[in-house]
Length: 161
View 1 (cartoon, rainbow, N blue to C red):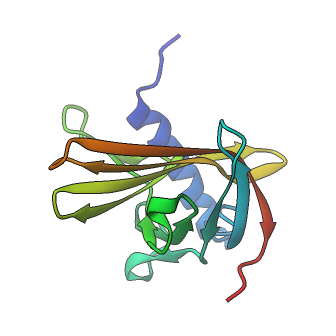
View 2: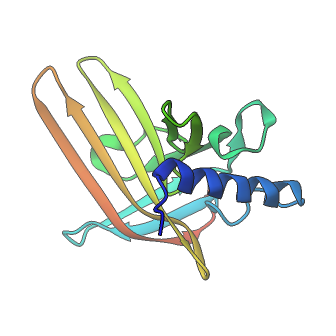
View 3: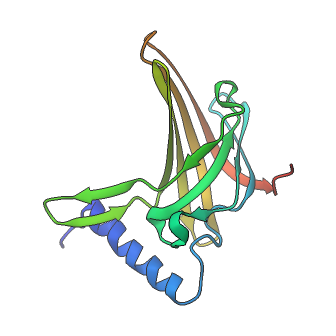
């Protein structure tokens, strides 16, 4: 049995999603529900992610254009708004372009370092949406970093302003 490369796996998934989109569905429905998604750290501390409605760059509904504004609860990340997207996949050797539908990623450059937000998705029959996130702040200049992982995210409520 021939195994699929990650590019093939996600390219096939992208084609399927494109077909669904053309049939009149939107990729945003049921994907990341806007509002508060709550979970806990491995240490048992409460954590959350707040997602805004999904938008698409250039108005084109395609997973590579999908953007979501998010905020997360770790002390170092509070007040920061992230723009996350699916990471693109590229195979020059196979002339293939795809995306990783199982993750959203966002990055913030800072003087002497950077921060990253990785949101892991779950795609199950009874649940579609964020399952966990990892927030990392890396200060290259001072050779320090911190990381918070929020596990078991569940949708709790629409966002309140």
